[in-house]
Image (cartoon, rainbow, N blue to C red; front, side):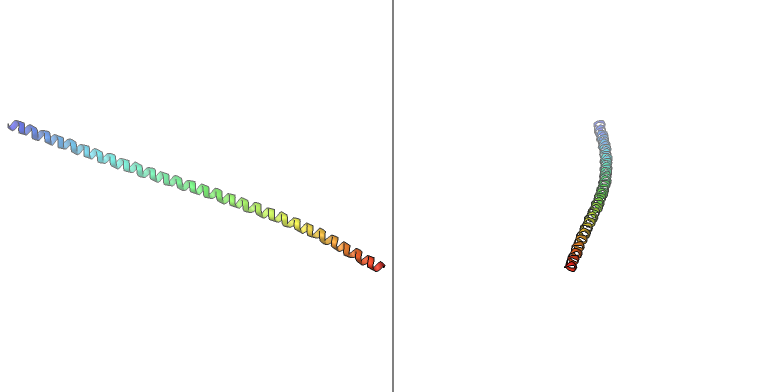
Length: 106
């Protein structure tokens, strides 16, 4: 009878050891999974930051290009306005001069 009780106790001890090993292994697996998940999150954040920086840089460059093009267009237009104004003023001065000559001749 004591042999049977001893075997049962021995079996219980063995089962408890197996359960403890399984718990330890499960804990290790859980910790490893958490580390991997944290690393993936860190990597994803870094990649997102990189994408944001690249996108922001492209947007800045595009805005600067658009600004430069707008300034050039405005300068061309103002130059054209100045040329047209000069031509108009020259024609107006010529007409005034002709009027003066005509009045003097009469």
